[in-house]
Amino acid sequence: MSNAQNMKEWLATSTLSEDDFIRNLHAEYTGAHALKQQITGRNTTKLWRKPENGTIKINVHGAYCRITGLGALGVVARKVKKMERTLLTQTAVSAAAATVSCHLRSATTSTLEPELLQSEEATFPFTQGPIDVSQFEGCALNLIPCLDPRLEAALEKMGISSLFPVQVAVWQETIGPGAFERDLCINSPTGSGKTLAYALPIVQKLSTRSVKCLRALVVLPTRDLALQVKEIFAAIAPAVGLSVGLAVGQSSIADEIAELIKRPKLEASMCYDPEDVTFELQSSVDILVATPGRLMDHINSTKGFTLEHLCYLVVDETDRLLRESYQSWLPTVLQLTQSNDESLFPLASLFHSSNFGSLKTIRRFGVERGFKGKSHPRLVKMVLSATLTQDPSKLAQLNLHHPLLMTTGKRRYQLPEKLESYKLICEPNLRPLYLVALLQELGEEKCIVFTSSTESTHRLCTLLNLFGDLSIKIKEYSGLQRQSLRSKTLKSFREGKVQVLVCSDAMTRGMDVEGVRTVINYDMPAYIKTYVHRAGRTARAGQAGRCFTLLHKHEVKRFKKMLLKADNDSVPHYSVSSSSIDSLHDAYNSALGKLKETVESEASRKRKIGSKFSKLSKAKATDHQKR
Ligand SMILES: Nc1ncnc2c1ncn2[C@@H]1O[C@H](COP(=O)(O)OP(=O)(O)OP(=O)(O)O)[C@@H](O)[C@H]1O
Image (cartoon, rainbow, N blue to C red; front, side, top):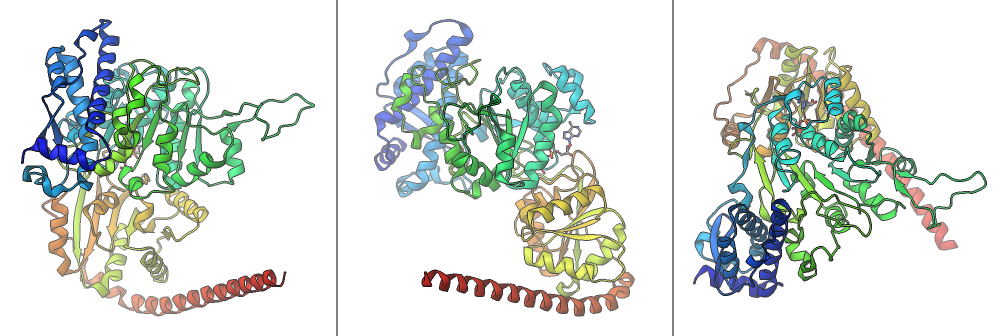
């Protein structure tokens, strides 16, 4: 069976008719065509033809297949000039293939030829023409083209004198010749400077805005991370008159609303009624950094909160955020930011948005996203991670427009250049001893210890603190704790008042703490992705760092195999002297005894609280029945 037949079969199983599919490709072509017309100023409508029988090559999962009924597109493509042809083929094919490949997963794949199924890891078409960030070099601020002098001064104030390679590469695709024409998928190692890579171009671009409204939204998975990113924006945005807001639920929602929404100025005798629609509420911020949960709270219930003027959407730690649906935050945001101005693009109404959202985004060069009644060009998206997923079905959720992959080297998993990885082999029951011996060697140095769960984080931290005179301040940092406690701990760690953080994985992605030279995996991570994010808390911004992993001898083979995925084929042994282990035995045994008591007393405290709570609920229920 030919690929064309396969595709026809797929179309038969999908909700999309062949005509609609062709129309979508056509519309994409119209977008490219309109763009060319704007750039060249020439009218080339005569090249526009309705599709006839023929074929077009579509890349699905890295393999090519042909679809019939689209020949005219090929004819048109051959006739137009080179730039336009590139736009047509890249835009139409990549966008179509993104969606097609996604649908293929749910279609009856048994009818597909083996070549369509052979690639083990599904590839997105953009992976075939990625930009290799390692080809770029850092660049002094005064040599960055078009950089606003006010931003240059703000960066210098932060102690930044040059841009890192990923920042230069992104600058080129945004403020430079790339001109924000494509959505960017940035996969660059931990600590390589991704935050500034997106913050700087967005701030520069918004610096010419005349009316304040919410134009850029950055979504992050945790509050501490959102706070960290907000601080980067807050260090540069005010220099060009922009304000930055935070929506993370750290304070009460009322306080947050007061920060985000500007209330009207009233005459002395008037009073503000939030239900009164005659008052126009406005955003107090141009840029909002948010976690999905609190973002949804504002979308659902904050008067005056709107995404209708949004120009930029950044999804940081994309793979983590896509894994969690958080009240469907992503579809909601995408729906609220969709262009519905049909006068500009009459074909827009022909789309099935759920199936071909990525084809729907048609660009207009140089037009700013505007206000009601004016044009609404597409929303620019930037998605980032140190371990960015390249699974088409996952990325398709983001409705990316002509996505461009920017990556470092060929591998998805990259470790920082100056990271040294070591393995430390010991018996499982002696791990605490080896850990303590290692911590003693590090002295006052800042260090992060990772365990595999919140429970073991708590137990290990408790045990370490029962170890007698370690003369190191050790604190727990995990998802089990209240946010206020976590933030306090992180602050002390940043200030150097705490030297060791014992962490669970969930909270540490993206965490940037200066001076962390060592990371210790107390439990071996199960996946290379986890190793990358844990180890990435050190060796940041070009600095050196070490990552130790405590292993049982049976784990060594699996560990080596895992690190090979990040191109690391030699992990040297690290040994601690047996005399220091011996000297710790007594303290360890005594700490273990105390740990048992502590755990028991904590459990009984929890039971007491639990029974008090259940008595209270019972009393309430009886009261309710009596009434
Ligand atoms: N151009 C620069 N010059 C000097 N330092 C920089 C520069 N850009 C970023 N940094 C610093 O590098 C560190 C890492 O940056 P950032 O947190 O953005 O990395 P990242 O790539 O997002 O890492 P992760 O994947 O772990 O989130 C930060 O401390 C930041 O202040």
